[in-house]
Length: 337
View 1 (cartoon, rainbow, N blue to C red):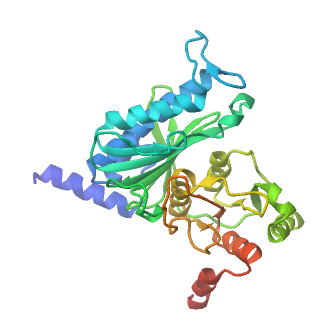
View 2: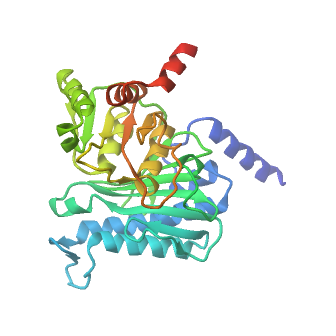
């Protein structure tokens, strides 16, 4: 290796041991974050899809059934359009074997090799017409399988957040932190924040509040939040409600089931990718009533659904104690501290 190349390689290894450089472009960040060119390619391809979706969401005129642009030539509902753009980007990348989505839950052969990707093309699409923030969620797994895996097997995960700013938020399994990039006017992604710790703070986002009607434990937890004067920050969109925990570095998101309200959230397309983002940011998760991380539940079916909590350590521990009556994994950590 030439001296200059050796120095550059050493600098890149050093960057992983320190803090990622704020102000880098996405391309520069990925060169430092992973030595795998195929992983860099799929993350760049997804970023390009997110950039295009952001434009479509921003410029679409949305009715009850579909969205059209100012020329009247876009007849797909915006979530279906996002789905189409993501499949096209993944196929064009050349490094994805299979991909599936909430709209097309069975894996589609992308004719590449390296990774398989699952995504929710536009989470919160029902609130696009109200101009609330919506987003894309994706998880990237090495190899050719999207079942018989766990969230912990992911190589990377991310979100595209379409609000006043367009944000690309990603986490890589083998790189520290959770990273935010903002879309610039010239189309480039600029690294603006690295999150490594989710602390304590009284902010809550309670999903599926209907479950409190016949889930007394969940009702008691919600009463705790209100009684302790937590700040309610809930939009009805999973992407902004979970993303704010990363941005504010505090808080809790809950989505619990009951006998009359069944689970809606899918592990493959939503729960596992968001669990990687939250946990790389320094937070925790609790999934499926099993008192385990959202990264540790085996995904046996593409449409597998669950309940979930994301947040700081103390909030996830409280969630488990209130809803399930115990939280042994956190008690063990405290006992050994």
